[in-house]
Image 1: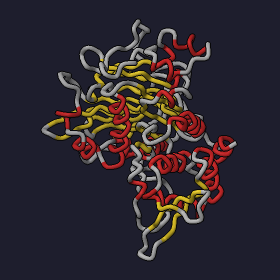
Image 2 (image 1 turned 180 degrees about the vertical axis):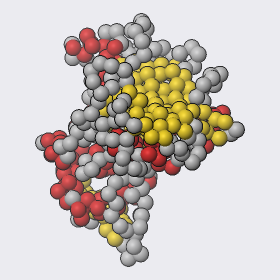
Image 3 (image 1 turned 120 degrees about the vertical axis):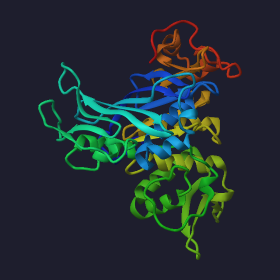
Image 4 (image 1 turned 60 degrees about the vertical axis):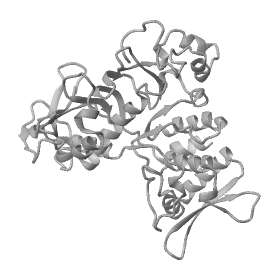
Length: 415
């Protein structure tokens, strides 16, 4: 019942990332992810590269949010960020589709000169028709380049040179602030709206300053503020969250966000058998984590892309298949990427939604769709669950102690 309610919140389909290619980003020497699904889960042993793929999205988001220099320096600059023993820039390429528009490719290549990051090349292109050569409507190198304006930029339109103030500035971030570049602006809005985070149960226990907040912070430390906002502006939506929370944690009756005399907010959890609520700082990690996830997934205006690391942490294994279903239902309004080690979470997933990661003999991350691994589709057609197949070693990465072993037989190129 609640899934239908979620789908009715926002009818406009979101933009979707359909493809990711990364080169020279730490262990990601050359990795492609094709046919990305609205819900994508990265699976693999520790050190296989899951968190690194996750960080690619965080890096790109931070480049737009706080600038390339800060995102680059935060990760240890070229010495730590670039793939060891490898030449060439760090390159990230995504293909994404806005509703009612052709597939757009965004390409960003960054390297270091004189200790500073420089945008080696940055471009946007699409193919307007079914045939023909892709048309590049934004093309920049080290702060110099051209862009074609208009709602539907075409090869016959005028190219305008707009120099940037510095070679470490992103052209999409700069030109996307102007109305004459609506397609560039749409990409800028899309990426700046991403939510890529590792939610912390401890952060949700804080007592922030009073005042409503529309969206959950990256750490979840403003959970009380978001509950306050929902109670004031979207009470029906908050009740929907409570209804689902009660299904997942039956003893929880409701969550209260109360302003204290000193102006701070106090988050309290009301257990059904008791007359007085419990302070959030004394509530279980699992209850707070589930509440934070539901607030994020049932956001009246969700981020266009959500990345969550290891959602299984602090949650009872029996809750994980249901959380996976909540994530899939949320993809009617957003796109989700998660990393996981949990067979219980995997048991609710489809093989095309899971990417298996491992390191090859050279130490570089490799990736395959679970659907492309030998025997997986046949096992699942007979009623097997993906998590069980993983634990039985059928996905080729069943032994996290060795961090070895991709598919035991070749299954084609990277996916």
